[in-house]
Image 1 (cartoon, helix red, strand yellow):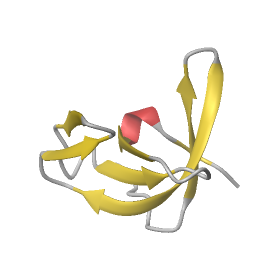
Image 2 (cartoon, one colour):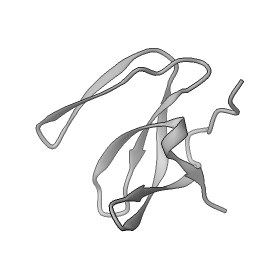
Image 3 (cartoon, one colour):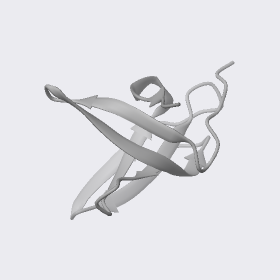
Image 4 (cartoon, helix red, strand yellow):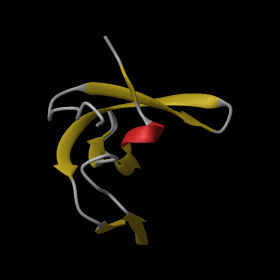
Length: 73
């Protein structure tokens, strides 16, 4: 089973040729859909592969699967 990241955890993920950063705000262990900047984003979350609502430093949001994220120190 995956070790779930907790709210407040700093994370990063690959975004094109760059790395994006943010902070976990919410954790989902069931399928979830959110509208972010007018686009419907869906993740098929489960206890083994949770999804996370992440806030970015400039105020944006991202909905990411556990497999997409890396924990930052």
